[in-house]
Image (cartoon, rainbow, N blue to C red; front, side):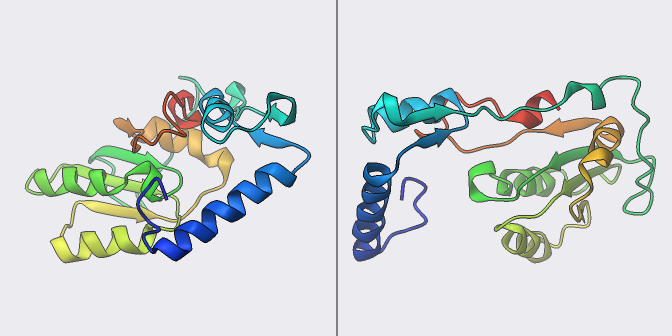
Length: 178
């Protein structure tokens, strides 16, 4: 609802009723960030005693300057300046802003925008690229987590895009650390 995806008033009422019943009837509610925990307590009125924090985390041992750069010539020329987004393609992560940047830089032939991953917005983002006739955008399917560090080493710029919603305000995505 906060993201503007659900607009039908009946569906919104039903969604809010279901959400409230779920939060009230549950024995425990899990939040993955402090911002989400605060939102649940202050906006959704979840009692602190029911709330548990399970923060997202990553293992830092797989990252760092000693990681070899991945050979990505299968997807784009090795000399291209790579602007890379890895992860879920969803409205929350604002991948459309990457496509907008690719449109602005469409004539800079040495710059390649690379999406690694999938998600509910993949088809919409692919359609945006086709409609704009962009040849400077590459889509790479999801990769094993062990391969991501080398892909990030290959990138010249790593993107961490997102939309601000009250529930995620102050969030620090794991991809920032990766």
